[in-house]
Structure formats: C-alpha cells, structure tokens
Length: 298
Image 1 (cartoon, rainbow, N blue to C red):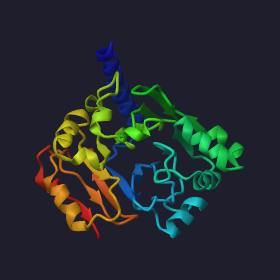
Image 2: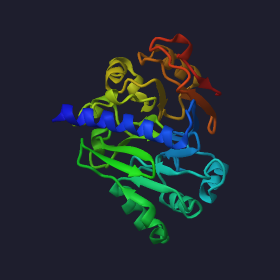
Image 3: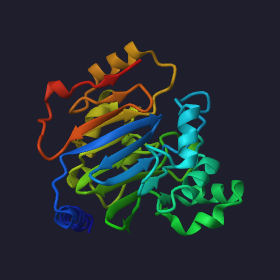
C-alpha cells in the first residue's frame, strides 16, 4: 500500500508539472529565494510567490528575527510581501509565527491564502479580534502525527506533513513540513524537524518526488544526519536554516564546508538577501563542488 501511494504521489506531482507549464506556456528557469530571518523565506517561481515561516517578529532572544522595517512591510503588505499567493506556517512558536503580524499581513493582502496547523489558528483566534475577517482564507492542515494531507489551492499542489518536533519536550506541538509544487518547481520546507523525526513519516518517500530546493533545519547538515538526509530528501539544492543568532560567520563557514550534504548546503546570513536557484536550464551533479557554499554577508 505504501509503495502504491508513493507511485500515485510521484505521478501526481509529475502531471502537475506538465499541467502548469502547459497552462502558462512557459518554462521556468529559476526560483528566486529571499531570506527573511531564521526559517523564513519568500520563493518566487515565474509569476507565483509563496512564503514559509516568515511572518514573525520575535526570535526569542535565540534566533535571528526580521528587522523593524521589514516587520512594517509585512504588516502593510508592501514589497516584497505584496502579491504573495500562499504562505505556510510550520508551528505556533514565536520564531516562526506571530498572530498579530499575520493578521495585519492578511488584511493588507486580500488574495493571500494561509496553510497552517490547528494550533496556529487557535492562537490567531485568541490574540486577534480581526480573525473573522480573514478566516475564510485560512486552510487548516493537521493530519495525524507522521501522516500527511494533500491540499490543492488554485494551481498549487501541497503535501502538508505532520512530523514531530525535533525536541522531545515539544511533542505536544503540531509541527508541519511542507512539500509544494509551484510552476513545476518542488520546494520542501522541513519546519522544526530533524532527519530522525522525518524518517517516521508514513506513506511517502520524499526522495522519490524530485525536490528542487530543500529548506532544512541545521540538524540536517550534521555528520551522519547529513548522510541520512541525502537519502530521505535528495534535493537538487539544500538551504540550511534555523541557526542560533550568535554563531560566528567563520563557524558557519566551517560547518558548511564539513557538511556531508550533497550538494553542500547554501547558508544565508544577511536578512533580505536573495539568490536565484537555476532549475530547468542547469542540472548540477550531486558532487558539483562549485555549488558547495553560498555564504552571503556577515
């Protein structure tokens, strides 16, 4: 049964690529990734834009948070937070999500849809009086633990995967990983997981789905865990995230150089920096050394 489900999902994501490219009559060559802070990213592929875990303002004095100017842009839906089609929230922790900022963001982006677990919705209901104004654009996705839901939103194909938090003390947290197909480009965002918890996911082999860009917690790049990630995810590009804010740039550089991830990971260090990841006109080999490090800023 698991094997059959994997085949069906592979066909699903493959056919969606043909459908979207045929519908738009375009071949997408690259995906532009903008780093916001911590685990927050905007990804633009063609005319479509999605956002992961970037609508927050509190790094809990441990993780990098957006600067004040960026938070104001979020609240008012101004560039680069305009024209976001879908934004995803992995869990309700403050370093991934802020209910007040998210509500303001949705009020000023009248077309945006939000995909999140039930605990995130509950937090919005409790802390924001304007929740009823945006409730019809929020899609709750909370499958059983170690299971997944398939969600379709106006051309976006989404697998919302309920994967346990990397820390045992956070077993009560509804933590989601997402695999999103956008204009045929497949994005995986790990949320607060690690290779051990991801390995418990039932009914799907992510490595069979042809991930183009994987946004992965720092734990995915460490030692044996990195080798396990190569088998579990097997992405064309790896982007590591969720580092503690006080790590020195040289330490990060050494970490990336020693990582056993294939290809070696990209790490952003400047907030609001962006990079284009080439997709259809360039297919790197897994051992391509010139992809080993993109360390931006200090």
